[in-house]
Amino acid sequence: MPEVGKEFGAAAPGPDVFDGYSSRLLCPTSRIIFHPVFTFTRFPMAKELSDAHRNFFQDVHDVVRLVPVGRVTTYGAIAHYLGARNGARMVGWAMMAAHPQVGPQAIPAYRVVNRLGQLTGRQHFATPTAMQEFLEAEGIQIVDDTVQDFKTRFWDPGTELG
Image (tube, rainbow, N blue to C red; front, side):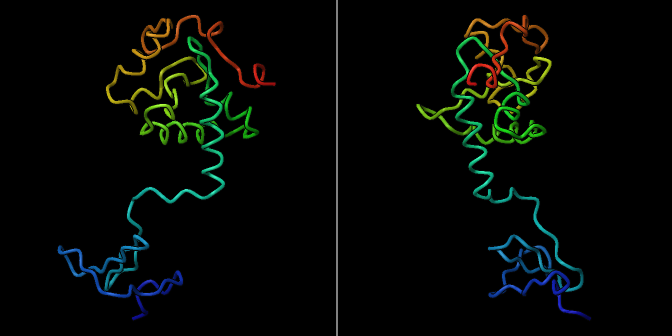
């Protein structure tokens, strides 16, 4: 029988760490499960961000901080402005990473909606209605989780920031 994990060039963990439920060995530093019979699998945990991702996320956060009160922008508009034409989903990930921040460094992630003006990021807020409440406090009318008069409320960073 081949050594566990050798198919992928992994080494067995240093000190043996058992998970307490079976004979699986855990490698806490790499989040890899070593099983005595089966090959290893990764835990479904968030990956560490690379410097490139951190820089992109920071760029997204900087643009979102510039969205004026009473206006909204879209994931795609931010991605296009930052040179990532098909990066709307990545902008969404950056918005999810922005939620734990509070105080002066807080990012107004509630001002970012989808291309149709819908509040698709609402599930990432403390309550299901928090995103709508923040926008309504800024004078934006929301009906059925959609920004009313979206075309006049839309703030395009490509146009506004040049």
